[in-house]
Amino acid sequence: MPADFLRLDDVQLAGKRVFIRADFNVPLGPDGNITDDTRIRAALPGIRHCLAAGAAVAVTSHLGRPKEGALTPADSLAPVAARLAELLGRPVPLVADWSDGRYTVAPGELVLLENCRANRGEKANDATLAARIARAVDVYVNDAFGTAHRAECTTHALAMAAPVACAGPLMAAELDAIGRALAEPARPLVAIVGGSKVSTKLTILESLADKVDALVVGGGIANTFLAARGLPVGASLHEADLVEAARAVERRLAERGARLWLPEDVVTADRFAADATVAVRAADGVPAGEMILDVGPKAQASLAAELAQAGTIVWNGPLGVFELAPFAAGTRALAEAIAASPAFSLAGGGDTLAAIAAFDVTERIGYISTGGGAFLEFLEGRELPAVAALKARARPGSRRITPVPAFENEPEAV
Image (cartoon, rainbow, N blue to C red):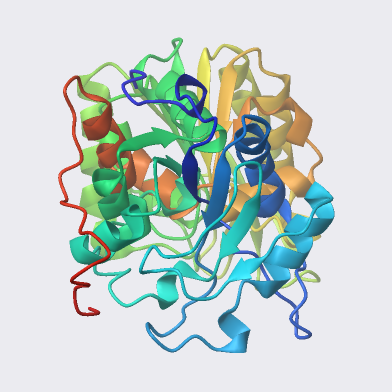
């Protein structure tokens, strides 16, 4: 992907009012405390950069699914404000009412604006709401790749309404990594797509079939592709109604001279349980009463050899039910093979991140995307609304497209 967006480093910030859209949608425990602050830590470089430059900084995010216009204590960013204050070593006031653009913050200071999805018009990407917010904004910064696939006011309309719109360091890093992996990859490009169902990732498989040199499929997805080749899958999870779709993906790969990797041997069990009776079977020898829950040792070795020759690796999804010990070897071997490969590797998706953590290869993966749904939609080849807005605003002669009203003659609330 070409670098056709403005970056935070490109913008003069001293004395400017900077609005950062971050992703602080963190998990909370029963007591309301944050159980994982990874997303907050990821936003710190952008915040610190703006503060050090002498900007007046306002940050917001969504958290959970609040009802617009009816913020409850459970929806509040108060825990995030407290954690930000701890990490930054400075007070972080939480501003409750800010959608009219009337809040104030001094240069060198930071405020956290309350849950943006509680504002009426946020999810509808309302231009009037964006215009009101933009009255307090000189520079808009999107540093929330995880929400880039959603066209909402603070991810899209505000980017179009602010005087300047740019990508924060986290957003820029995500776009750079994905561009490196998909737009201008070192070849061979190998993509691994695992998971339970072809139906949930069919558009990803179809998109990758036009790009990759080798497509590796795992989990229940692989079972459907095995069935498409006429191989027995026993009682395994698969989608018989998508066998023809799987064949079409394999045909498209063959037409381009690309390869589909499927396991030559598999690990089966008589039931889905950690204490099940386990066997290693040839891929063409799965009995009727058994289910495939992992790839076998021959498959692990052949996949490691494939990845050792790769120039770029994109990974989304496990090869088996790695959460259960008897069926973890395949995904462990995959993680270790990617970590050992000289290729640039890009990994994303919830199960993938869990596997990376479980098998302790975090430091040896080229780039780990925190994007979730945005990462998957990018793999599908979709243009993400937030990214489209940043690209539009970076074009020569770009101007904000939403008129910004004066404080007088306040428009009615949406």
